Length: 304
Length: 152
Image (cartoon, rainbow over all chains, first blue to last red; front, side, top):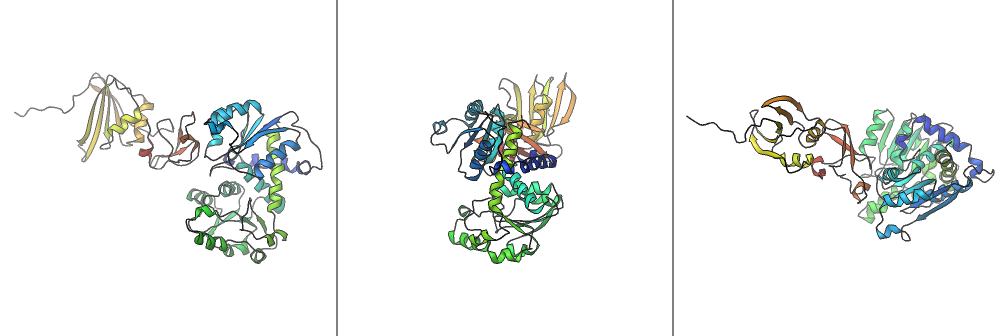
């Protein structure tokens, strides 16, 4: 039984295998081709925390492959409010479904779920921990847009300390041989162990506090949300957020082939005017969640 | 003539844990989680021949297993374990930090699932012998201040 818990469980070969399969599923994801390889199978999506893209794209992926979906989003109408443990919830749900997609506020929840589930568990984000399927769809987007996963200058911008997607993305990109720049406000820098890993693998570019410092040497500008709740002073937040606003003027300073990505939701890190620019790829990135998750479901449920 | 006597009697059969860091003997007992029916002597802040102070634990008629002995390293890495048979030291070795610790420790990350009353046993993996650095197998975070995380 194959679980999808952390990007660290994936070898380079595993990642490429998922991306190749996802590429073959784009037409099905768009509804241009019909495929029912998971007909009669059931996916449980249990989300203890809010989500839009992750849950809907998993459910779309399952539906596009002919399967059915059960689950909940928010715990108000479940036995969790009565104090049921996650272990019991997982034991029960794994009896109803052929795979479980879990989002949970506590780090390590997905690992725990694997110990109590009779079916594959897919981690859809556990606290500030891992979100491996986001990393895979980010890699898929990079390969689709740039034609390769290596020899790229990638600038990760925003909250690099708490943003869960950037840690595993930095790690995954380092498997392929890239230069990674880290751009964050003071106090929200990338954790030391990730920086050490990048330096150790010779893929650390630069660390700075302003996107302007790296924009002219960036192939991929990967922007993340700066969360207001990280700042005790709202004035301080506004000051920092203003400095990290990606607008057409900044995007135009980058190389002609540069692309802009964002895991979404964005608040105001990227101004709406950027959406119409050819560099803006974040909505394509959100769509790519569907073929990538279809590939994963076909592998863990369909045994492909 | 000055009469010599020992603060704690020698033992004929059992285990002596020597060179425990001063005032750490009770933490060692906590880590070992031994039943309280053992006959034992506890010497705290004893003068060490090497200078400074140390704690000593002596267990009569009880031999620590290698696995149990290694748990001592979580609290006092320099401790030595002596196995006594018929009044002689038949084996002497240093406690080695265990590669994996199940139970005994609690994760220092309050948001870790292992701290949420789930029916699981904590598990930590040694990532570096230097400074005995352990990572939680659930949340992947490194334990901050090992001594404070001993729950046994």
